[in-house]
Length: 57
Length: 375
Image 1 (cartoon, chains in turn brown, yellow):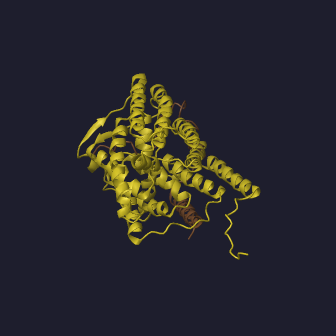
Image 2 (tube, rainbow over the protein chains, first blue to last red):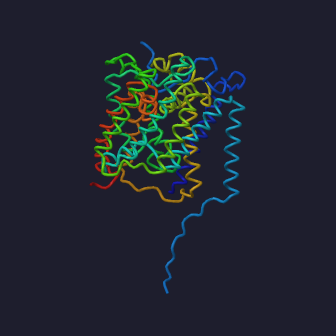
Image 3 (cartoon, rainbow over the protein chains, first blue to last red):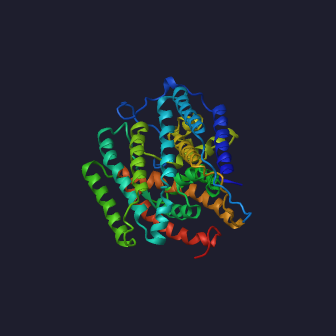
């Protein structure tokens, strides 16, 4: 087995996951998407981050 | 006359192949921007940039820490500190002037956070890859990283599932430095660690190689751009846990037992497309960028390393621990160390100390686990 096989398996796994997610998730809508830059948009940042404290119990 | 033959090194891809692949990548990024929105296309491109920089310049976080501990080579650690300092120079004013639009990687210091960082530091040395490193290594054909990656994701999901219980064991409020004084303290702290690394390092190991300087410039620029586009700093491990959360929900699992996953923001992300999640997009980009560099260099023909069974079992366990501990620690090298310190969070400093101590321990475990020859 070579590194190329490992890359192929990794990319195949990502592709299969994206396909399954596409089938099971809410449809994409570019017209409701946020603007390119958050900076200067006037909108609060809402993305998730690993450093965000957990919700209060 | 000798009849032996020598295997030729694999030839790099030709101009037509390279052009076709680059066109395909550009079309994919443009297509995502059109289908999902420009921000998401940009974030995938930034993620690919991180992957290209890390793999292309052979830069990372785990290796330099290992070299500092084993060889007293301070160059890689110094490069990391300089990179964080550059990011902080831009991030602090951005946070001060755009409070709602831009948020930092600010997390509380706590018992589980410190323990998580220690375990993460040990595990990343066993796998030889941190959060970004595991993705980059898997993308460039490293079998150890590719095996660890799915378990990293499972662990990340589990750590997030239990996160509120762990933080209830004892946690301080979020403490974040801000403004000019906060930036000055951050830069002074980075300089102090740099001086300590130079003093502890071997003679002349403070000389940073040219490729590290190029990596520093690329990573810092991309991290600042990421902050402007996403409104949050670069992170890795949230996305990995989200992938598993999506998978188990699709299979009918009920996550109502986890305060973390039923919280409105997280539940919304489980139902939304993964192509609209910030950290998922940059994670995919890291894998893709590293794969592109590995292919470009014609470096995919070499065989994978041979390890005993206990080494592969250790990689699986270390992968699980990487994911679980990084959620307790509020980030990996990227989310906590790089972005935490770069945006003023005190937890980033504590994370660094605990993870570095864990790394010292993890380096000593590797030979015992069959992942390298005993020293």
